[in-house]
Length: 229
Ligand SMILES: *Cc1c(COP(=O)(O)O)cnc(C)c1O
Image (cartoon, rainbow, N blue to C red; front, side):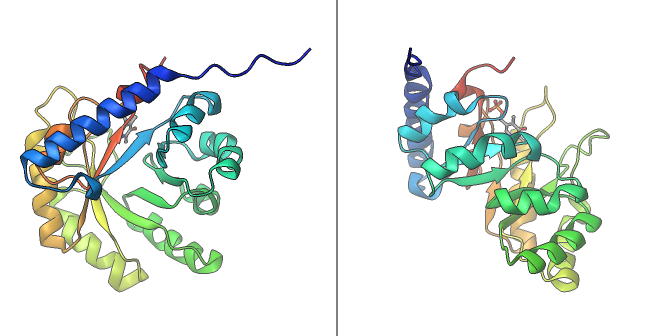
């Protein structure tokens, strides 16, 4: 007996098209090119079988928040879709740096000096140079990772001067139950002050708003893959 074919998840393919459409109109509204916006499809908690149709539809940027989970899913998917660009959007423990560098092309969560220092050393050792974002705790939330807004410019400079790390952008996760727009605006202002070009901001509920405020990378999960358990 052969296994039944994996059913095509047409829901995620249609949802992806809809998100791309929303990005196109939001970009147009502020006279930006939608091609310059990277849609990171956040596939955390979803299985390889659920991710495959989105890859099949031609999408290539994906985000995961756990190194371990990504290590279990992505090597096989990548073998079939070698031009995939994998983004780490969750906290990075220093003991997982080598594993993360082996898997991820973009790291959105550089959030403390110790991580920056060890990341720099390991990048040299492994000959890797992922795109790096500094995570900013725009809401100064106790439980949330990220450098404080007032320390951001210094930290970006410190990354360069002390550890030779080129930071390509800033990332934030605004507090839930708050209007995210002021947080997006703050992140854009800090990026300008720090002299970095990219802004990773906006999730399923607010990516159009983030885009209008300058997002270059939006991280969209449930609007593509459906609700997570
Ligand atoms: C889960 C997650 C997302 C995606 O959230 P959705 O609301 O499902 O779009 C974006 N960014 C980060 C950092 C996440 O952990």
